[in-house]
Image (tube, rainbow, N blue to C red):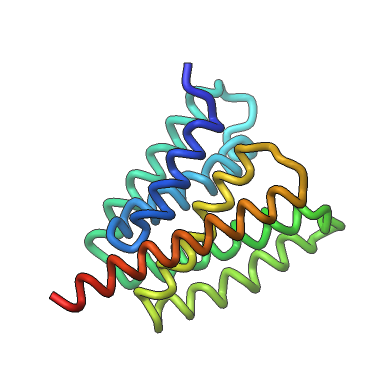
Length: 172
């Protein structure tokens, strides 16, 4: 049986390495992550397989819509990715007093949505690297210091790798 940590690591690697090229995958994974957070509240009392199926369906639909409505869906995904990133960090560092993680998520989400709409390539490179690194780091279950080092190294590696691919594509 494949664990959730293994799935998160594989998804994280895909986002770090291919977030810009496979933007639809980035959108689908971000929506899947949010759906996995929200679906248990919306489908309270329902079987676990239904929650997972609904989350997978939402992620797949978002990925498909991203192909047809690229800019609009990418701005929405930027909002979700920024919000997920800020909310997760606030929770990870125990800054979860009251509504603080939700407020941080909303502010960072709006900022990321605007950045993604204006600076598409660089925004998706940075956001996909950050979210992918966060997924991997969370799945490793290390202490805070090791997690920060791993997260930083993976984020930088993702930005450098995707920027290199982007530059090679632009020079052809």
